[in-house]
Image 1 (cartoon, rainbow, N blue to C red):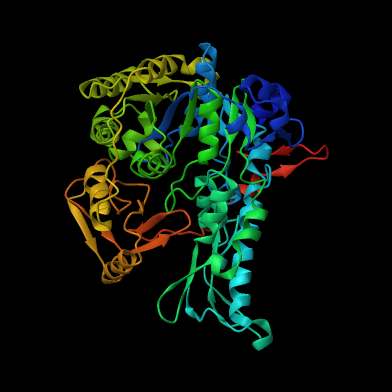
Image 2 (image 1 turned 180 degrees about the vertical axis):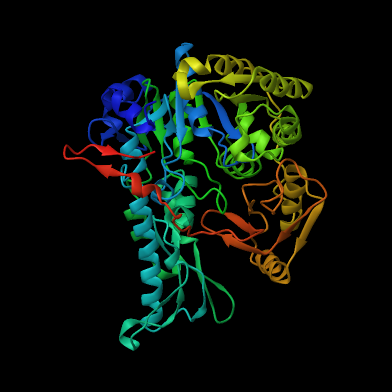
Length: 555
């Protein structure tokens, strides 16, 4: 069996000009980056006039080491829609170098449902992440320089909140001392690095709708607090203009293609826990403008990714999905039912039935809380049995949601035709899309709405620190912001060991901070690492370059 990169390298791709023409992008708005990738000029939204296509969100059950295949399903669905004669455009996130070289490997799909050129997409691509890191670190440098040059803003150096960023898993940088070596080297203080995808600038880039909006948001970033306890923003450091200049090209969505030649817009990639975890607003809107069906995905399981997509991204932009796909695998559901990973190839209906409530809760949240039509995509593995598949279908039927088989990893678009037909069917009707909470609720009421309605928690407890932070945020007039709850992706609860669909638990909020530029509140419920480390055997060990310039070992 060929590896993902071998499959990707075996397919002859179309020149990006052909893909742009297929998508309906005027040639003067296409900025090629080599033969098979390009930037799309932002004037697209002024110059192309057509009705918006239907938005289809792909999400998944709570992730497990057994795998779900959300990105692969997203790409395969777009190719399947193209096979049905529909004009489809897929919108995805860009991968981060940290996971690519760490534990996860690439993030461009898999098998015969990939976006290409996968090597470029998984590595430097068009340089967006480098630009975000540069803008982040420019702000850090200007902040420290301001303090060094006299500190006219009276910044309390013990309350500097802005960290540096690098797009790599490097645990040594989580907590560092800077300014060592005497006065000439700056002010000595504790600092640290985030991985670039965790930078607020990544979230800002992905939520910005124009250059003016980008610059406004950058200016609103809170970098520190002064000695009176008041926030200090990037605009006060006169940094936002230069940061926006660094991000000028990064704001433009990237155009590539699937293995089957379906246009794909791959742009942005916020950390899917402390931010909304979706591709950019501009990418999603471009896909909807260009296609009759825009297929996009949200990070992690539906309790995190889909919740943030719907309650933050859709709330802020007016986007409204026409259909939701919930991806599941028999293997993962059996893990949720307590079955060890090494035994998943064995049929076990009891373990599957015990794990199925995880899927059913996610589906119920989509249909009952958000009031959106849903379909379950069973990403089939060769070891799945007919009886296991039938059990999933039966349980989904009880919720009046259809479960269909998907074999897009092995068969490309052909393996997603049944899924595509169901998506077209459910997307054609109207829906009563609702948020999990309304804007006018208090911060606590918003948190508790997500915890009880989406997670299934009995309630929420707050540390003393969180209580004080909430009071301060309310005083600063930030109650209207939506909440972005950071918790483990491995459970509905804040305990990663509670698999399936746990009941009888409460969520503990440890801190609440403002991402004032992104315009949401980050609610921390556990220990979320914003700078991951490399595993014992990093994926980087397998990556190589041969004498002909061919990259190998990427996933």
